[in-house]
Length: 459
Ligand code: LLP
Image 1 (tube, protein in one colour):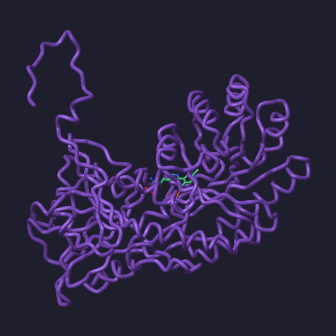
Image 2: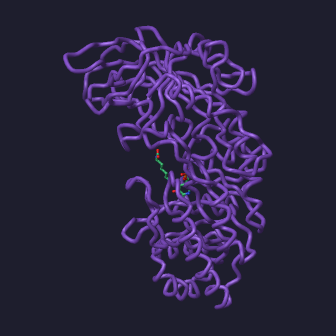
Image 3: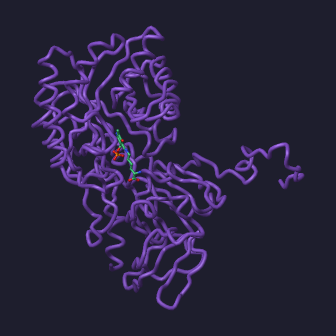
């Protein structure tokens, strides 16, 4: 990779055109200005200095611009649409709030996410509750809150929900999540729509499930739902899944069920890196819209979408400082102060994330391969193997790009490392939206049982 290619990936992430109903809404707002990488109008070096590294940075303005562009594009399908932001992608209150301000709903998968959506101001009537293993307590909380719908994924779940709703004297709004048996052509660990995945009710079991529903008086069937996987960069699997959903919806309506909406899930893929690495592809949004229009669009039913990554992925990055550069016998290692506990995606999915220095490399900079690694005591603690990088020295700050989705939220404190703080930028404003806790805070939830001698503590 040349220096220019590394730079392109950043410059390609220009602020989205809010009015563009196309797939151009990258939403990233990171670019070099005057030789320094900026998040919107804020120099990232300043954030690294003030907040320290590692640190997650979100371009809040870009997230909102991407939302607007997606909402405009989805209007092209025809029927009214509701975007329920998939909170799991980035559950920070400020992120959810930014979308709620624009009228978004939320897709949640736990009581914690539901509470976050409510705290961020999402109206209950715009919240859908998905997930294969909702507990009784979560169902009760969702019903008492009065959310839009619960997406049910099994017969056992329907029976339990009916019992909980009966106990509360409520009618539970339900959508059946259907497994349409479609290969999403994405990473196996995030593919969810093939028979054999744990998700949804197999499409051929839907008729029997409807029979059962007739005997569950506290459930109201409002919709059908599909979600076939995450990071989809091809429109064809969507077309196949939406086609099957449309066919099923016609049958269900034909049997007299009064469906109120169809939930098409999320999964819209974003670009992570240069084409040479196979990471430049993104879901062609225009093709996605056309696929939905040709299939479910014809039914005229209101549509619900659950995008997560698409709205936030490219609008976040992880700042890290180079601690050491080690020249081994066969390899160069760039050792960062960020690790797999801050961003697990490369370790877990072999995910490719672009890595760029904050100081713009000279046009003639020599790019040499290095393994970019963290300090955690596992060889799997690697962000990028053999990544061509410009010269880097201890103290230099780099950015790992496109970490806005499934970044901070999948982090841990493994190796007793402190969680990285989070900063949000909008235009020339920036704010710390999550502090780095101290070690005492991290230890505060631990208790030493009475049969062990007290240590006297070390604050
Ligand atoms: N709806 C449902 C029912 C889901 O299960 C998911 C994601 C979404 C919506 C949002 O999908 P998105 O638009 O963000 O692709 N940790 C993995 C991704 C896991 C996705 C799980 N479900 C990663 O880092 O790639």
